Amino acid sequence: MQVYGLIGNPVGHSVSPPMHEAAYEELGLDARYVTFEPSPDALGIALDGASALGVSGLNVTIPFKEDVLPLVEPDPLAERIGAVNTIDFDGEPTGHNTDAAGVTRAFEHHDVSLSGTAVVVGAGGAGRAASFALADEGVDVHIANRTVSRAEGLAEDVPGASAHGLDDLAGLLSDADLLVNATSVGMESDETPVPREALHADLAVLDAVYKPLETRLLRDADDVGATAIDGGWMLLYQGVEAFELWTGRDAPVDPMNNALRASL
Image 1 (cartoon, one colour):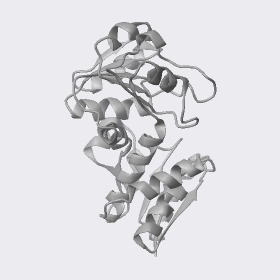
Image 2 (tube, helix red, strand yellow; image 1 turned 120 degrees about the horizontal axis):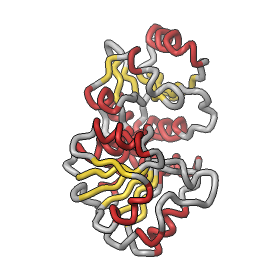
Image 3 (cartoon, one colour; image 1 turned 45 degrees about the horizontal axis):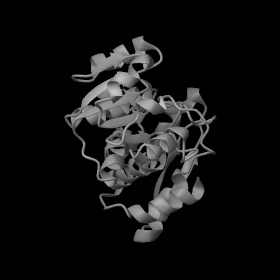
């Protein structure tokens, strides 16, 4: 039996186990997906233990995505993003960042062209993944963040990107094709980081928030005729990417999506 799992602290809220278990069941794989919650000072010991026990792969979540970097061999994308969310134990433990694919595949699933200009709101982990993913597709990326210095730091790392404050959003979005909310705004309250009047029908809007699936930002986007993409799609496709990386098999996307949404 192959063992995969999630390492983080806490992990009790995760919907990754039912999503991956649905994939194993659909393809008849002899595999299980389990969760591990080591203390922050035991991360290295936990990874050594996973490797010694023959764990095949791990997803990595808060607070370990950056801490795990020096403990694995990161691939070039994970190294540039500065975070690992997936580890492959086939040989030397290798770190990957499938959050980037979560962004691009979510847009592609909704028939959105990865071209033109994108505005990424937020310069944290999700913002870094989204910015690198879109820039690597040839999209012009503008990063807007409440603290401008953080946007500037990220823009220095992302080829061709520019940095802005939130006050610049209206002007940036007037000619934009893509918008990614990579902040947590909208998760705990019915708020949005983007003024409704800045949205328009030619925009595709991806909100990384997935609890709730229908955020105020997405309701506003839908109201103006924009393409509204909930955070469940980004969550799904980062998991799909991890599954395919681990198993070498095409992921059963529909069963995984059904299990994910039933768990939210």
